[in-house]
Image 1 (spheres, rainbow, N blue to C red):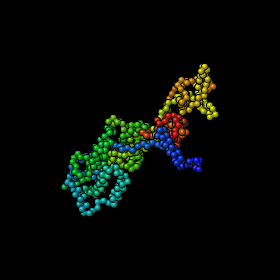
Image 2 (cartoon, rainbow, N blue to C red; image 1 turned 90 degrees about the vertical axis):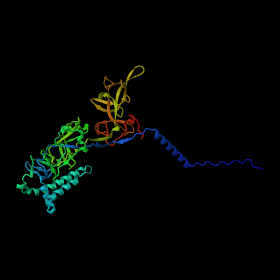
Image 3 (cartoon, rainbow, N blue to C red; image 1 turned 135 degrees about the horizontal axis):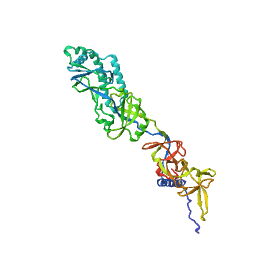
Image 4 (tube, rainbow, N blue to C red; image 1 turned 30 degrees about the vertical axis):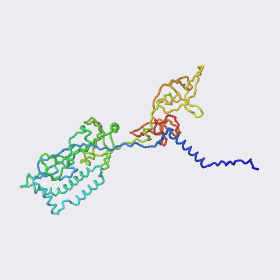
Length: 463
């Protein structure tokens, strides 16, 4: 007999724990991804001490009292004084040789193998090479040519000293009048170059002067032929000189107020104090003119001088300008703010009225953001224009009506955007230097919102 009680066997439910955990993790990741792309992101910035990077390096135009001396005859010019050397009135600077005999004599000395330079001469030239090697800058290759001419001038000066001893033989009887000596008309520093700026006045300065692409400097070369009236050298005889520099408009007043500023000359890294004056140029622009009473000899051959102004750098807390915001606050007399509660919270006593018109007071907590001239800057979260508050232990009343703005940032140390007032000491296009350790302000290592426009006051920060 068949058994009709046979039941179908049900397989037990086998739950794969690994798959469950995988699904949970996937759901969690999906939720986090959605929240990330749908929530507002606030980037924080850690406040550190620092200073602003201000460019104080300038290239200026040197203005000196310079006198160009011209030739009174025609012929080959031969120099005996070294460029940059101080000469006295009446000293022999050069000679004009109508026949070229001095040039022939020098050529003959060289061909005969006679040394025209002493060991002392070689030592001085070697020292010049050492100085040039330590100050040379690839970005200003023109100085290599200037150095070349300076060395040539030095060598010719040394060699011509020996020829100078024989000049008396060449200038007697048959050669009389063919070789003439040129004596310095005054004492000063002798320079063997001209550039057209010798007679300019400081007030004639214009922007084009600082464009070196059009600048031309003519070297006066030994043994070259000159005509009557041609420039043969120039003299500068005053130690007082000046440098004109183009400066940003917002720095002109700052430098003028300093009166004197410390200047570093980048050519030799030496420093000097310069007297500061504002100068109105011929083009209507305002420049800075620095006056010196020393160092002129060092830069007598330079028209363009690179300098660095060493000024006091304002230091403090460095914050990005994007973090700074201006916010409006109510002004409340300090005597109307009192303490309340176990946490001694700042509060004001505000008048409130019930439905039946009965007046009472409530202690309304307020946050103080600044104090000035006997008034507190308080937030507008609870107070409104027209609210009346009472002075503690008095019947005097004050109506909320005055408002004022404060400059500040949002501090996020506590997880929400807490406004903190700042005092800006200095500022450029990207950063501001603010005063540290001020009441109601910031301290080093505080975290602030990088973009102040991205949050509201007291907004909770989740990032």
